[in-house]
Image (cartoon, rainbow, N blue to C red; front, side, top):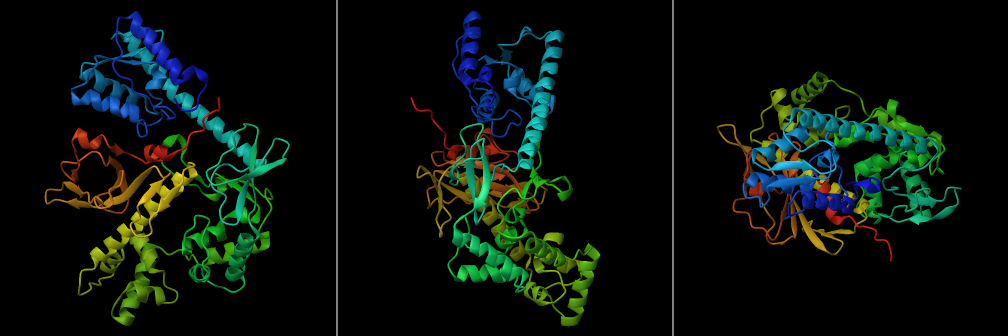
Length: 495
């Protein structure tokens, strides 16, 4: 169950299943649960994953799987996915029975057709619900209410009642508990608001770059709302977010039905100007956007390479520092992003350094990916309402003072025969309770998947391949929703 109506509570499902088992002279020997989980995708469904792992191991201690109804098996957007998982069970000679359905649990054509229809209906329900929820969120945005996410530096989330009476400021990780309550953004402490205005003044009036502004704030010991030093990117976020001008903007990014995350174009954003008290007036905000956009001259691939060839002809050599110091030339970071690495851009213009620096580019990319991954995990855990501390030296995460976690990246290496291998360099000296191991794609430019290894389990081999043993892949996940769920705090109603 996720957060649906009482019909699908775990207790109600368990009761119906136990009655079905009793009526059919069955004994329940094991229970798999996915409480608080969406049925859209297999990732995050640890209960279903454990069940399928037990089935495929060939050592399952059960002969029949009892499920409340077809929708509890999953509301997969492709009905064939649900059929496939049921087929895996049947192939292992383990039947799947749906206890609350009206059709018989047999192999008849009628049952097969009805199950297919029910699976399609379950997926369609999720699609219709997604449309309704999105429409409701858009309506609340148009009314000036905040929808999710941290407030950001210089702002705070204000809880208000249905009549817009202020009820209090929400701390990071806190959520509203009454359905009719709403959240708006209000200015934060005076000193933070002043810093936001200083950032805009330095950028629009003194023509200082984001990097210079970040250095100024860091030299004064000022940190971001997450308690971290300022960077060029965090300054850019302050300069480009419309909320500082009082605008309420929604649908800048989307992740509908647990599919691909998208950065949406401004044409489909949902916007309400004047929703909040502005820290920056509209005129200065627009001036900042003009400067930002003006610095982004859009070059084609060939134009970028032509400029790089001209620099090579002028200087006789190329380097990241040289590129960054050349006026009118895209930054070295732009070349890395466009062509995959700076070394690849060198190759395309016919420049071959005396030494092979490709490993430097790869190391830099891996370090950047590791930093981004750690930062995203910390932000997601805090947004889930948990407390997290990160050791400045080892990067070890301590979550809720309950367990520790280490984040590692496994680079992909290709064998002469075209196979892929990933070596896990576990932080044994840190002894983390959980190791989050992210495998990189064969190009080592993005994350392929994740493994969550508990300390209590000892890996026989630390070398992963394209096809791993079930004892290893049982820890594999497509995303980190399960790990974030480990840190999520649950509200318990007082007796």
